[in-house]
Image 1 (cartoon, one colour):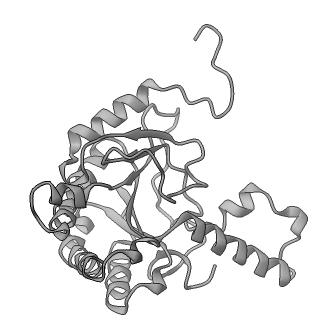
Image 2: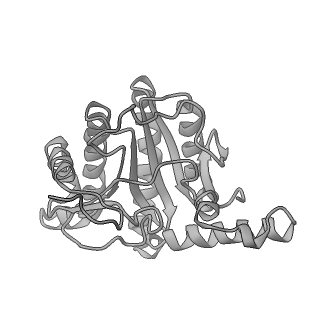
Length: 265
């Protein structure tokens, strides 16, 4: 993949998850290994309280802290947060600037604690298109935490699933034109290997806060068989209790991946 469009580890594109990535325990598990969250409702939370929208985004950072802390304690190995989409650039300039400033603030203020707690930061999306300051701070956080193994925290920044697929197909085409790949060999595994999430397990559970029932261009390929859990709770109010509710619902579901239920069930 090109340096413009990739998953960043150690400040540069990576084709596979770095060595030391947590592995699923032997014998399987009942809980999700990879949880992805669409953090929705910041603006509505603020508006209902007579506050500017940026106040909702700032309150949302507190929710990120709570969830990141809870994930390893609940057996979650990978957490992917939809932080800024390719469509979010359409928002008012003041709000976009505020979000970019909060990104820098989060990277600077949180990296020490994340590092102490064994959290590895990775970024999914067109990272090179971020403003220079934001890109530099993100890459610094990635580099600082790259050896950690307790939790992988994927920040989806300037991310859109359509853009991800376009980038993947361009990378595959480049390999075909270079004579490195026979078109007849292209299959689902080939495409998956060129996504920003290459080398990672697909999300088992996708959570959306704020009550909307849509994926909003988030992990469309990877979430094909993910369990979906939607809550009306706005993201700034989301805490460990809500995460545990989602995990409890996940545990009650039977994941068949297109098959049929076992006899007698």
